[in-house]
Amino acid sequence: MLQDGLTGYQIFIRTRARLKSSLYGRHLLALLYGEEASRMMALCKHKSAITWVQRAIKHIKPDLPASLTIEVFRQCCKICVASKLFTEAKALVVYSLKLSEETHGASHPCHAQTLLIYGFYLLNMSDIDESVQVYRQCLDIFLNTLGDVNLKTACARQALGLALFIQGYNQYNFPEALWQIEKSTQILENLLNSKHVFIAASWRLKALLLEGLAANTENEQVAVTNLRQAKKLYWSCVKMSREIVGEMTVQTARYYEHVGKVYRVLGKPHKAEDCLLRAEFIMNHVLEEGSHESLGVTVHIATLYAFDLDKKTYAERLFLKCLRSLREIRGVGVDDFIEMCYRGLLRVTDNRPELQNQYLEWYTEWRDQIQEQHQQTSSTSAKLFNSLKPLLEYVSQELKTSTRHRTNSR
Image (tube, rainbow, N blue to C red; front, side, top):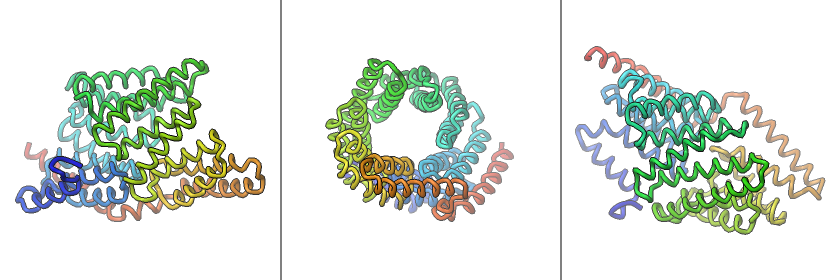
């Protein structure tokens, strides 16, 4: 709920009506639709987000200012990446990079903003080393143009820290990643109000790094110390999120989920259960029925019951329930949750060999299907984005034309 009692959707409707009735406002519709797509994505409404992405791109015109076109493309690219529409995301980010460099220059902060999105795309494509290089380039531009005490610089450090964390995970090498995150947190705490979502996000990243350190050390005392510090940070995130956006929000639920998983690793399954059940309750009330985010929390609860609380019968029912739903949807991390379900089913049937063999057969068939899907071109992307390809081709041609016009006018 926002100011004056208006919801985000009500504000969007009013703004769209005013823009459509304005002579010059129509030029901003692409940006407005991009913002609405981002809002839908924040609410985990992936299909709605994709629909608004399509509408935003339809309103890209050659007479739009280059900076506005770049901003819309950046928004749309991030949503495409989150929806695993990588072909479309690549097309959008390539156009954005080309246009931002031609318009602003390679050392301009606006170009660095586009590099941030490019790094995000590379990270999700598992091109970790290239992503780290892009984030370093982005950070250098911000440092040279805006200085260190700046929100954009802090965000670049945050992104670089996460990429370094993923890059160093196999080598158990996190020092620079942790330093970048701590530096980012320090900048954010100095610049922002003590209660701000950016600060909570930075705490979350630091907690993730501490979890990684705990998982990859043989010193049990060091591991427990890191986990306790991570738990403290997650609880701080929960408290801040409740104060800023409220208890019944996806963001708060995700922080509860993080706390629950840390409690489980610390050997406190009942506290873990309390936090995970709270996260599940919130997710089920604020998200669409059967969303993979809420199902993911349920999978963690079932795993807790199967491996830590000896509630194997209940865990089996939850795993089967989640499997039925997860096999019908797509989204970030869905395959990982399905994998957890099958492994959990094998665990809870270790004393029932016939049933275990049946679950093992299902698991093997699913793995084979996944491998075949990875080898073939996905048709789902084409169905969801059936109108995007010609739109991108049209936009590409118009951008080339408008870029030549701008060059000639200069």
